[in-house]
Structures are given as structure tokens and as C-alpha cells.
Length: 364
Image (cartoon, rainbow, N blue to C red; front, side, top):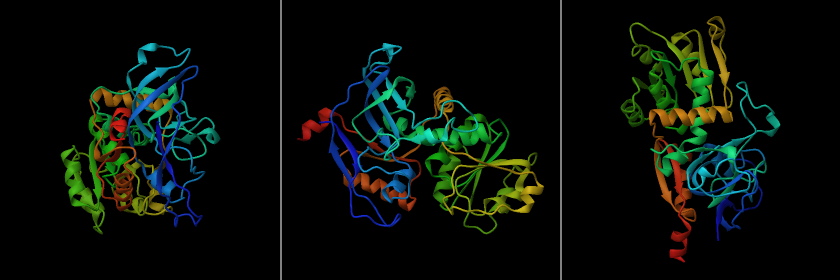
């Protein structure tokens, strides 16, 4: 029987104090309807929102719908009226969200926007053997990607693409970009995109090994945010003919504004996709006087997803996978991925390689 990875109900508790166990439930194999595809999933990736869901720190969580938003699979059946049968047996990437088509400023109807996996807003999640999706909710997977790399791309890639390309005004050759907190999936995707655009990329981390890995991927330099003078250290690394940052892609928050205003050009952009340090941050008067733009950004549209996948295909970008575990029913090892994310040890994405039906049957 097909399986789905869901949360196990426990006695209620305060948000943040709860940690729902994982469980596998058997489900029926779905049948595609008009304009629908049946996708056999072969890999799914974790995001921080999945950790928040397990801790009841995310709105509208579901104890019955499959977890996870990132998925790579193969189209194994098509429903009536699908526009082209050529997609049959092709590997695809699932769009990780619903309810946002093309509008650059934000979802056309914010009440209809949702991310896949683990909530009541949609019954679609990628931590399962099979999933039904509308034919316009997939993109052909770039052929150079492995299933694990493909699963690592959707949510982080879309978030990073919008933060850099749509929001920063700095995705072009020679621009100086700072990416904070290198090692997470979004930050690494921004690094790969920015390098491909020809930007001069600089990064921060509290881990020297992560800084070294980022430099090996094309970053021009990196500084430890644990240093009280990291912004001065960063200034010394900037090229002589461009002694300022054009944009900052930030997922941390904290003191990023006050720290970077002295090295961010007048009219520069802070593109903010997360605030892992604190849900609040300071906005200082020097930023106002320098005409700094702080732009919030989250996820992206269906059109941006299409453009992002095409860019990955063109430049043969391979998303960074930190670690994989094999088997959707391998709950102990999957719990280990969640623990690794909680501790911030990963450099790249954490991925579940979903075993095939034949592999499952051979173990029965």
C-alpha cells in the first residue's frame, strides 16, 4: 500500500513545547482526474517550516495531511484532457506553493496562498509515495539533477530567486552582494544564483568551515558574525573600485541594519526572507538618511518558479544536499534530519530518498 508521512497526535501542549512524533499511515493509490497528473515521488526535502510544524509553531497544522513541501518525482499516469501526453514518464519538480500565479508584488489573493505540506490549507504534501497535482503545477526536472538535488531545489530555490532577482535590484555582473547565515538552503541557493549572474558574493557564518565551503563555491570572501567588528572585516574585502555593498540578502535579522548601513550604498537594498535571530529587528535613522530600502520577501510566484528552474537548467546549477536518508518509513533516521536542522549543523538541504514500491515489498 502507498504510504504517507504524517504527525502522530499527542496530548495537547503549548506551542513550542510540543514536539509531534512522526508516523507512517497507509493510503489508497490516487487516480488522476481531468488535467491532473499522478506523480510517483522519489525524493522529498525538509525545510524549517516542517520543524515549526512539529513544534506547533505554524498556523493551521494538520495531523492527517502529508508533511513536506519539496518534491521530485516521475509522472506515472495522466488524467483526461491533459494538454500533452509527452509528460508521461518524465521526472518533474512540484511547485511548493499554491495561490500565487504571476503578480510581482505578492499573491493575487493572500487568503488563497499556501505552502504544501502539513497544514489544513491543502492536503498535498511531498512526504508520500504518490501525489495528484494539476498539470500546470509541475516543471520538468533539469536532466542534470539527481532526485535528491531536485528535491532540494523548489522552496529554497524559489525563495532565494525572489529575494535576489525580483527584490534586490543587484542580480548583475560586478555587483557586491552580502548573504548572511550561509549554510541554510535558501542562502546557498542565493549564493549559486548570484555567482552565476557574475556578482561578487560575500557571506557570513559563525562556522569557519561553512565560510571555507562557501568560498569554494565561488564566494569572494566571508566573515564570522561572532566578531564584534565583522562589518569592518567585510569592508576590507570589497574591491577597490566598489567599496560598498549593493544589496544584502538576509535571513537572520538582528543587528543587520545597524551593522551594514556604513558599508551599504545609498539607496541599497536589504532583501529580507527570514529572521532567525529574533522576530524583531532595529531600523535605525542612518538607514533612513541613506535611503536604504528594506524589502520583505517570502516564497514566490508560479512564474518566478518557472524562471528559476529554467535558470538552474541553463547554468547547470546543482543544489547543495547536506545529507540524505533512505526510506520513507525510516522514522529514526528522518528524526535525525530534524535534529540536525534544529542544531543548525547542515550545509545544504536535508533530503529523504523515498524507496520504491518494489523496495518496500522486498523487505516485507
